[in-house]
Amino acid sequence: MAKRLELKSGLQGETLVRKGMMKGRRKPAPQIRIAPDINILKIGGHGVIDYGREVMHPLCEEIGALSKKHQLLVATGGGGRVRHIMDIGIDLGMPTGVLAELAGKISEQNAIMVSILLSRYGGTRIHTGDLLELPMLLKLGILPVTHGTPPYGLYEHPSRSEMIPPHRTDTGAFLIAEVLGAKSCIIGKNVDGLYTEDPFKNPDAELIRDITAKELIRMNLKDMVLEPMVVGLLQEAVNIREVRIINCHKRGNIEKAINGKNVGTIIRAE
Image (tube, rainbow, N blue to C red):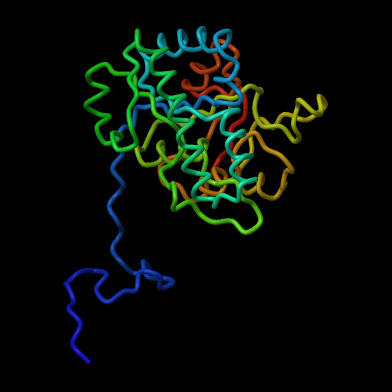
């Protein structure tokens, strides 16, 4: 057998999947926080953008004003059109990866519209590949807007029992916050936070103000306002150790969340 070529390194000869591989190695350097002062604000398509002018115009005025005092990146959801295209795609037998591609196109459309609404405040639509340019863009006074769909696309994780892609726009906003080492990850919805049940179906549902990811997983809620994938990822994250869910229909909630006040639900890593 021919001799394998090896390059001298701390991981020389490793399969990269061996259990305990990192034990005994020198302590890794702290991860660089690319944009430690930025706040990632995800505004839902279904819960916010689809309400149209009545909600979006005052919301964009609020976000624009806040961008003069705080570093912000706005990530958009897809909304009703995503649900429509998913329904058609599932009926036609589209693979999960194709559904992810289709859904991403719609959240991109929303990012374009929101960036135009924010244009008077420096709102500029950016692509996923532009995230590493954020330090420069922020110094130029740009208010970046991107779509929340993570770029798995055709490589989306398959699911035997559920055709809906598990990595959607809440997850994308969280992953953006984590890789940037952001100050906060705020998920804007049309409800006051995370409830034990859908508050639109059960007005007596209990609002959960503060909970850990493990506690939330143990509750095994039938329905959540947040994508379950975010809760799982939160436990493994290095930089983002909490996610805030707020009602961004209510004026002032975004700034309160940026300033660390609990105006909805806080989900903590531990």
